[in-house]
Image (cartoon, rainbow, N blue to C red):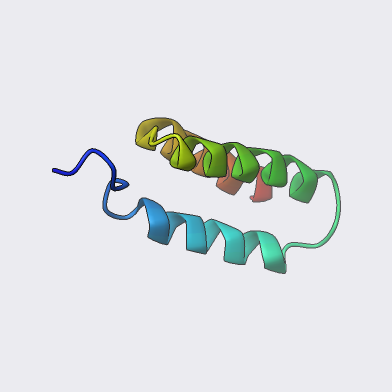
Length: 64
């Protein structure tokens, strides 16, 4: 497995969470989810796939 590529599915998970965030109404849940999503982007850029996945899960929970 190439260490430079994200875990299969991480990029797709980013798309789904971003789409859910885009559709969410403004408010504290959306703000919290944005912080987690931004942390996930940083983790993905740093090739920390497990951290990215955790942050995406947290973003999804924040929107629920």
